[in-house]
Structure formats: structure tokens, C-alpha cells
Image (cartoon, rainbow, N blue to C red; front, side):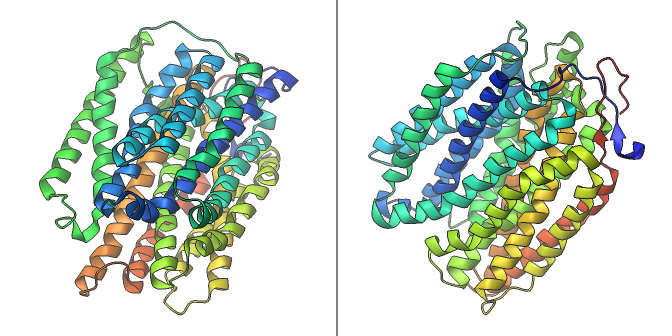
Length: 489
């Protein structure tokens, strides 16, 4: 590996992964798969829930908004939780919350209780991915991290591949309650296996939680995500949907002020190692660049992947099940490519993956700007599959390089930052592109999704993707450094 493609950091991981540690990682992967599967099945169910619960589209949006808000509040706190509590405590708490929320949703007779169930589910889901990432980066030797992160890619990809298709089948035959009914036994089995087999990895430290930081985090990240979700949910028809400009301004002001005060308080608390979210992770230039790259990619990707079902179901008039089948090949390709990409990362570093990944991703997004009412379905399948491969070339090295660039004591905080950036950037991408799509349609006098609105939104997503190529050149792979080696940022 070229020296110019590495950055050396101290490591404390012993060579190899023991069978006990490997078992814990697989349990966490299963739990993450269940959580992601639940969320991808839910997305397709919204139109059915509107009919089944007799609610408006604006009300139905809260089933997604409440979940996103809870994630935005809990993820920043997860860095502290992973420092304070053991692996076993965190896992059992997260899976118990998820199982409880899924059970309440399955038994829910109406809208209000279903929203509450979504909040409970999100409380568990928000902890699971940071726990998985922190565990891997803590116990897996640097030379093997790419391959292990490749397994994470399988989970992240296969759950969305299965979710929409499974949801379409369930909705057509059993009804919306069974979306949760199918997930529930899988989650309970994962919880019971974890209760039997999961062990504690890493060290914990006793520190009191800073309540003002929790409150500021809730207002900051929650206000920002709420404002973004309102824009994305209502688009150009915000007045008719009941979202006023004043509401959006207040949400963004509260979020902005909350974030500034939260950051200021963390800078003070981290001097005594008491921060809720230690911002010293950003002292690593490689971590900061990797997280920025993930943010831009999430902004473009989540916006476009939200538009694609709208285009297929409203412009092309295909069913929810057919939509799931169209995106299935890309998700499968992304998942199965993960381990191979991980091995390439371990051997050759970031640039051999990130540069072609960024070029392919941007190129496919630009090709998406050419789709219209008469675009063949097979072309969409090819575009989505190649786009997924481009993303696969990027996500695994970015996850691994970002967290691997930190000192071990900052791993949990780095995982929390990565999760938070993805959540906020994804919400921003959805809000931006859906608003553009709706505005173009409204300007043309149309009500709803139009081919022209979709096309203009795709253009914006493609433009956003261009900085990815620059970032791909700058990010380096952390060296497989021995313990005690000096850090170079």
C-alpha cells in the first residue's frame, strides 16, 4: 500500500478476533438487519395506512416524522451511552425497546398508539447501529476491518432489498398490522439469543450524564430534523397541508440555537472528559473528510431513492410490489459486493474504491436526469443496479476509514457522529429534492408528482454529487499501526 494513502493512528486491538467476539458481532448484525428491515417495510405501507386508519396524508407523515425525530435525539446521546454501559446492557435495552414498540404497533387499534409505537421502536433502533460500528472498530484488527465492514454492507443492503418486496406481498394479502407481525418474532428470537450469548466487550467508565446537554441535543437535532421533515413532507403545498412558514422558521431557529449551545457546552465539558458527544473527533482531518463525504452522499442518495418510488408509482403507474422488484437487483448487488470491497480496502486502501465509486455514483445520478414517462423499466433497473454498486464502493471504505482514524477512546463518539450526520443529511436530501419536485409541478399547474418535477429534482441531486469526486481523492486509509504509534492527522 502506498504511504500516501495511509494515516497512522494508535491501536490497542489484539491480533485476530476470538470466536466469542465473532459471535457478538453476528448477533449485532442480526439485530441491525431486523431494525433496518422494519423501516424499509414501513415506507411502502404509508398509502395503505392512510386508507386503513382513515387519516390524512399529513397525519400519516407523523409515522415517519416521529421515528426520524426520535432517531435524531437518541443517536447523538449514543456515544455517551456506549461509554457508560456494557455491550450486553446496551444490546438488551435496544432490542427490548424495539420488540416492545413492534408489539405495540402490531396490536395498535388506531393512529395515536401507532405513532407512540414508532417512537419506542426508534429508541431501540437509534442505539443499534452505533453499537455495531463501535464494537467492530474496537475488537477487529485494522488489517481485517474492511472485510468485517463488508459484512455490515450485506446487512445494510439486503434488508432494503427484501423489505419493499415483502411489504408489498404482506399488504396485498394480510393487511398492514402484519408488517409488524412478521418482524416481531424475528426480533424476539434475536433478543432471546442475545440474552443467552452476548458478552461484554471493551471497557466502561462511570460518569454522570449531563442533563442540559441532553435537552440541548433534543432541541438542536430534533428541531432541525423536524423542520426538514416538514419541508420534505409538504413541498410546495405547505399551506394546504397545515405547515406554515412560521412553523418552519421556528423549527430551524430552535434547532440552530440548540445546536450552537449544544456544541459550546460539549467543548467545555470535554476538557474534563464529561461531554455527552466529544467533539474532539473532528481534530482528525481524515475523520472530518470521511464524515463530510458520507454527509454529501447521504444527502444525494436518500433524496434520489425517495424520488424513485414516487416516479415509478405516479409517473409510470407500477404497483408497490413491482417497485420493490425493480430496486431488488441493485440492493442485492450492493450487499453481495460488500465482502469483496472490504477485502480490496484491506489490501489497497481507499482511493482505488472511493474514486471509481464517486465517479460511478455521480454518473448514474446524471443519467437519472434523462428518465421520463416512456423510459423502459429495464433501463431503470440497470441505472439503479449500477448506482448501488457505486455506492457500495464508497460506503464500506468511508465507514472504516472514518472510525479507524480516531483514537480508541473516541470510537463511540465517532459512531454517534457518523449516525447523526447520516440522519440529518438524509432528512435534508429528502426535504430538498421533494420540495423541488413539488415546486416544479405546482409552477406548471399540476397537482402531485410530475415527470418534469422528478427530472429537475434529479438534476439537483446529480449536482450535489459532484464534490464526492474531490473528497474521494483526499481521504486516506488509516495505517495498520502497532499499539503506541504516533497519530498523524
